Image (cartoon, rainbow, N blue to C red; front, side, top):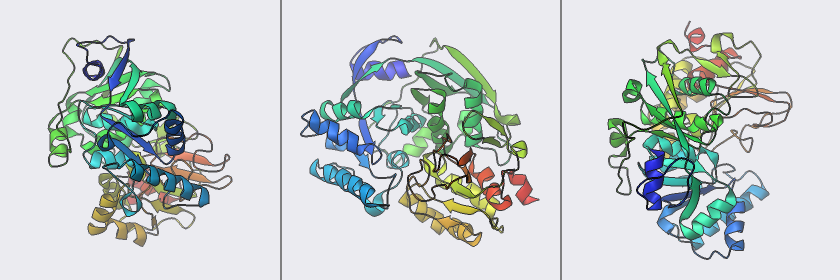
Amino acid sequence: MSQKILASRAGLDFVQPGAIVEAALDMVLANDSSSSLVINSFKNAGGERVFDPARVVMVPDHFTPNKDIASAQIVKDLCDFAAHQNLTHRFEGSRSGIAHVLLTEGGLALPGELIIGADSRAVTYGALGAFATGMGASDVAAALITGKAWFKVPQSIQVKLSGSFPPLVGAMDLALAILRELGPEGAHYQAIEFSGPLLSHLDMTARQTVANLMVEAGAKAALFGVDRVTTSYLEGRALRSWRSVAPDREAEYTRVVKLDVSQLEPLVARPHSPHDQAPARRAGYEPLDQVFIGSCACGRLEDLRVAAQVLQGQQVHPRVRLLVIPATPSIYLEAAREGLLETFVAAGGTVGPPSCGPCSGGHLGVLALGEVGLATCNRNYRGRMGHPTSRVYLAGPAVAAAGAVMGRVAEPEEVAS
């Protein structure tokens, strides 16, 4: 899939892994964590107008609502740039949320496309069958001017998925299991392609979670093939015409990984690596200070439903701060309509405005000296969510909700019993 997309955008019939190509881009993204560097690089390079106002998106999501004067200036500069460039798609103020969820939700990332972002989690759009990847600020600035970027064509790994999930086991557990199989560098500068009978049972939320986490194995991109799940998701949503890409039967892969999820159980990644994993039932009894449910990995409506299912009729442990942040305004509104937000607040949680929240230690729930957090995020390296002495466990929404009730890492079944 990666070779076909890159060849198409480079105007070539075929490209081999290892080849260097210059390719036309379908979408370019920056957010407030990267926008200052991108905008400065754009101006320093002599940039005046972006290549296509309809294909550039800049989203304030890390530090909004503005947490201090410095972040307020960053967001203002981003919004001023977007206004000056007459960008077609604006996500500011009450319309803002997590960029990687807004783009898929808004039909701005589509199958067969080539997308870059000044953020590593741009790989999320691979859930829709796009080749999407993160790049540095100077590369993104050049792309804003030219509409192109250069790529080294990656080799590919195939991950075949089968079986059916046990109760309250889901996409985050699957993503962690794949990371455990591949290791920290197992997919270094390679594209991961997902296939197998499980895919017909993986909704778009699950696919986005899995694609999102693959950066932690070093992946350049992570792609799902286009099927009924994809077409159903895009119906009435896609803002452009699109054409899917599928691998040839004789496509060559550097490695084929087979994973049956039938025996998968709720997993936890322990501090300070997504690869240091254990089943939730034996991850230890370290007391938790905070639980965060949200992020571009697990802040979608389906994730909130799972968390609310576990929290229904329960109370958050007196020691724990539970923070729930829906990824976008539309998810927030639907969660309110379904009564999910009421469930979280009634249980003793706090619901925050759509944003990245504490995921990268920037805002809303930063951890203090020595505190321990459990989060539905994608990274937990030392100091990621706050003080360098804090510790963060990663898990899916069911385990996170159970941890909020028990005051420690726990299996969802413990709460039910």
